[in-house]
Length: 280
Ligand code: SF4
Image 1 (cartoon, protein in one colour):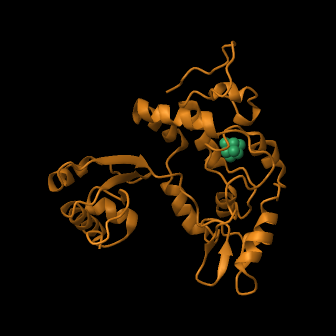
Image 2 (cartoon, helix red, strand yellow; image 1 turned 90 degrees about the vertical axis):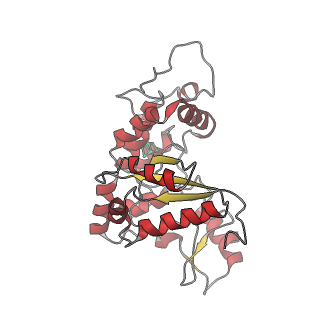
Image 3 (tube, protein in one colour; image 1 turned 60 degrees about the vertical axis):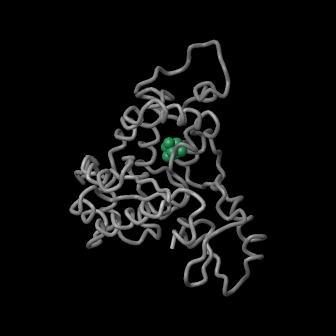
């Protein structure tokens, strides 16, 4: 199909293991490894650009070294090993045992800090640049992203949600009883004015300059604990570890207590030596 209708850009393939055994452990798909390798060979044969990403998961021994044999199959084959994005719990917050399983596959927060060093200077500089442009306290507003701002996701039952991963019943809009116009002109604009009610959230996340670097959001908070406005320990720890790796905070600091964050991210200059030494 891609030979007939070439994609406009590069295809990103996520490989769940560098051996059939490791692949099966993660995906539970029989022959999944063989199928994905076959797919890559076809893409190579027809000159379709693609990039392959391996995933690091806790408890799955797979360093990626076994990908070497793929280099023999596909000349120029290169693999980027990345930690999985911080893994999100089941979106509907509906199964404690499955959430436990997801929890067991999450990398320890410190690993996000060490990986910054391992991934080299280029990655470090990119993350620093990202922070200098995009992070900062989000205030009490619940939605600081684009959820429901003119776009959303519709499930097979005709329910509209403001974001593909936000499944809270509070933000569900039934299209069989309303219309897209009403959803985007009335329902979601109102939703986007909601403020966090949780006191701990208001005294931490609302003031935290890691907002933007931190993966926590209403959708992930709902998936984790069934409420959209909670500070989630795991996301918080990951963001703090990354911030330490980027030299933005020191070991004992809490990001919501930092006052000179604009200096630290490089948005304001200062003559004082308040920048934290890099701790990579
Ligand atoms: S780092 Fe912690 S306090 Fe800051 S936004 Fe994330 S969860 Fe909230």
